[in-house]
Length: 625
Image 1 (cartoon, rainbow, N blue to C red):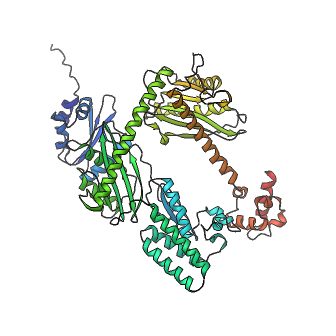
Image 2: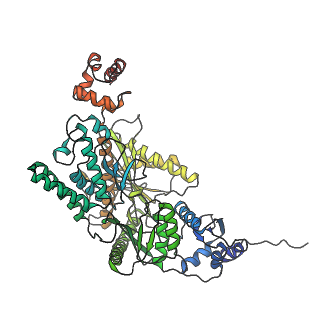
Image 3: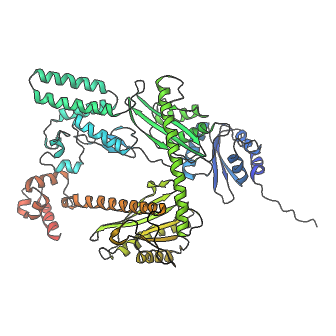
C-alpha cells in the first residue's frame, strides 16, 4: 500500500502563480491575505490576470512588496464591468479593511463649511460640518473651524445676517447684542423688511460664489448715492460693510488670479514617512490648507514614491469630500485619467486633474510642496523626541516596549452636577484627538461628587465595550498603558473593574497630584509597588504632566459645554403643545419663563394661541417642577 502523500498548502509566490491560472483577463479588485486571514493589501487592475501574475515573477519594485508577497497565504477576487468600478471598489475596501500594505489616510473627517440656511423666512448663516442634509447653500471646504469662524464673523459685519438658532430667533422680543454691535439686522423683531433681508442674503451668496468685486462695486455705488442724498448714517453703515468685505479678501493669503475653484496637492516622502499638503481655493480665494501624514507601507509598482502616494491618497480623500472642478498635483499619478473619470461621475460634471508646468498654477503647487517638506521635517523631529519620551515611560513603568497607545482618564463636575468623564489618547504621533471620548455619567445610584463611582462607571463602559468588540472579532484598539487621575483609591477601583472584565494584562497607573496640587510633586501608584515620585526636572515627568493636563482640559471643557446646555434650556421647551410661536407669545406676555411659571390659568388663556387645556397643562407643569 502506497504511503499517503501530505500536500503542503501553497503560499507566497507559489500561491499567486496557482491563482493566476483561474483569473480572467478583465477588470477587478484583488485582496491578499495573511496567515490569520488578515487583509494585507487591496489592489485594482484593468486585467486581473496580467496584474496579479506580476507578483509571482519575483521582480519587485520595493522590498516591502517582496515582504507582502512572502506573507500572502490566500487571495480573493471581485470582477467588475469597468476599471472605474474597480477603482471605486478598491477605495471603499481600503477604507473599510485598513490593509497593512496600502497607503492610508489617517484623518478622513469632513471639513468645516459655511452654510446659508434656506428653510426659514430669515436665512441663517452658520458653520457646518458633515452631510448636506439641511436645505441651503454650502460654501467650502475651509481648512479649519477657526478659519470658518473668522470668515463668518466678517460676513456678519458685511451682510448683517442672523446666526442665532431658530428657538432663540422666535423668542426674541427686542434686538440682541449682535444688533447693537452692528453684526445683525435684527429680522427677529422686524427691524428690516423681508425684501431687504433677502437682498442681503443674495449679496452674501454672490460674494461667497466669487462675485466679490460685483458686490463691492454695488455697495460703493449705493454708498455714494446715499451720501449725495444727505443720508450720511446709511452711507456710514455701507462704508462699514465695505470695510468688512475688504477684510475678508485681504485676510486670505495667496489669492490667485487664475483660479476660481481648485484643490492643490503636494506630496513629499522621506525616511519611510510622507506628508501630503492640501490647499483649498474657492471663489478666487485661499480658504486654508491642511497637512496629512498617510501611513505609507507600499506604493504602486513602477511608480515614484510620491506619485504612488498621491495616486492612493486622492481616491480616499474624495470618497467623503466634495470634488472641485480642478485638481492640481505636484507629481503626475499613474491613474490620473481614471481618477478624473471617477471624480467626474461623482460630481456630475467634468473634473480636471493636472500637473502644471509653468505660470501661476505651477507656483501654487511649488508653494504647497515647500509646505509639505517643512511639515514632514517638523513631524520627523517631533517623532524622534516623542520616541525617546515613550522609551522613558516604558522604563519608568516597567513596560516591555514603548507604549503605542496611552489612555488617560479624568472626571469633572460641580457638586456632583453635570458630571462627565473624559478619555484622551496619546502615542508615538502625539495626541490622537480623533480617539478622545466623553462619558456623561448616567448612574442614578451615585452619591453626588462620588469620584470613585464616576471613575468606576467610565472604565466599566469603556472596557466592557472593548471586550464585546474583541469577542465579535472587530479590530479595536487596546491601550498599552492607562493613567487615572488619583491615588491608591482610584487605582483600586480601576483594578476591580478590570478584574470583573477579565482584563489583567493592561498596565494601570494612578497619578496623584502633589501637596497643594503643585506640579512636579506628583506621586505614581502601581499595583504591588510602593508609591514613587520622579525627578522634578525629568523630561518623562513633564510628558506625564502634559498628558494629565490634557485629560483635565478635555474633561473640564466637556463639563462646561454640558453645563452651558443645561443653563440655556428654557423650561417652556419641555411642555407638550408649546412650539416656537406660542413660546414667543408667552415670553412676550410675561417677560420670562419665571413670569410664565407665576401666572394663573386665567392669565395664561389670555395669550394668543393658548387654549384652556394648554393653559392648565402649563400651570400644572410648573407646579410639579
